[in-house]
Amino acid sequence: IMSYNAYVCKIKNLRKHPNADRLMLGECFGNTVCVDTSYEVDELGIYFPTDGQVSPEFAENNNLLRKKDENGKSIGGYMDPMKRNITTIRLRGEKSDGLFLHLNCVSYTGVLLNELTEGLAFTTLNGHEICKKYIPMRQNRQGNVSEGNRVRKKKAPVAPLFIEHADTEQLAYNLNAFKPNDLVEITLKMHGTSQRTGYLPMLKGYKKTLLDRIMRRDGTPIYEYGYVSGTRRTVLNDWEGGFYGSNMFRKKHADFFEGKLHKGEEVYYEVVGFTDEGMPIMSSASNRKLNDKDFLKKYGETTTFSYGCSCTGYYTYGDGSYDVLPKSDFYVYRMTMTNEDGDVVEYTPDFMRYRCEQMGCKCVPVLWRGFLDDTTDWNDAGMTAGEQVKEIAERYYDGPDPIGKTHVREGVVIRILNRPKFCAYKHKNFAFKCLEGLVKAEETAPDMEEAEEVQNDET
Image 1 (cartoon, helix red, strand yellow):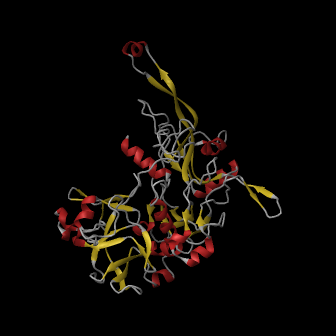
Image 2 (image 1 turned 90 degrees about the horizontal axis):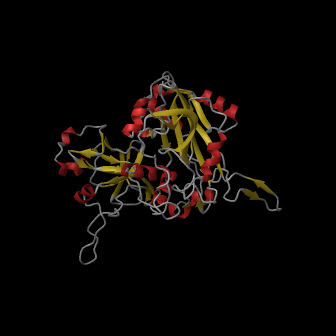
């Protein structure tokens, strides 16, 4: 399940808002938050990161919902009663990235406030739901609830060794995962839809004994190696239907790997650009709504996450000549090898890139790689290994996308290479989080992974 938590933490660097007398600015996990003047420096409270949704009970008990009295006067908060979501915005010209509230905002649950210690992460308290990840309830691009590509419920799994890629946690809340002398690689985080393909044992049928026939049982499943593809959560049994109305744009990327993977290999990749019908895989957003003149000047009226792809399949120059461009493309970010016993070996990024070079496909761009230093200026500055990583990541997580150069990048992924299992964290920039919030405000905005979360919860 896609993770989200509220955190008990202290608000740091509390100072006056330059453009609002009754507001102040502070920092939680390095994110700037706006609060009123009732807060004190280093006060212990509860921080709700962007992209969360508070429960109806929590919102009501803290008067967070928009409401008016019989005379039309506002007597409530600012949250939409249906969505109750937390977004990244600019408030009076200053960044506001999340929500920070006094510790007693959860006192209605009966929890002992002295038990809420700094660093505690939670979604429920004393049996009361407080928050969860915000996933808009919406329809697919054809106007129908997506049904076509759920994992089929069979007595024997279609591909038992076809492993999902776990949700990547946020860097800001996992700085303690980094240790001095860790080898770290920072890659571009790309805004597309996840896909995976493996050459793995697949269900081909059942071997039935005479007793199985008499008892009308399926018998013993028969598995043979074959190619299987899927999204982040589902196995694609066909290429029709699905969240985008058709998954045919995925097929050519899955077909690319046929005849190239070794037995047991599974490759994870991000598909970016446009569907075969020319629709953006990830929704576009109006840059004007950010109220940021510099951003508008740099990136234009609209952000479309194209990554050098074209909705028409070509780019026409002023003299009438043109270049053929892909409608969609893919970039590999992980590979594994799974034996017949289900033991998974993680490919190092270097070996992953070697295999991709052999196969003729691209990997996500590497932006920085190095060891975390425990002897030089970092220690002199009193920085932990995690703080060092965050500082380095923020050199690369913002700015134009290095591939297409037409839109802002989403952020970066920071991977610790000297771990036996896949260990990586994501870090998104402020502008992207604002755009993501605008997209989610639209009921028809697509997000394949989040749509699958809703489907899986219902099945």
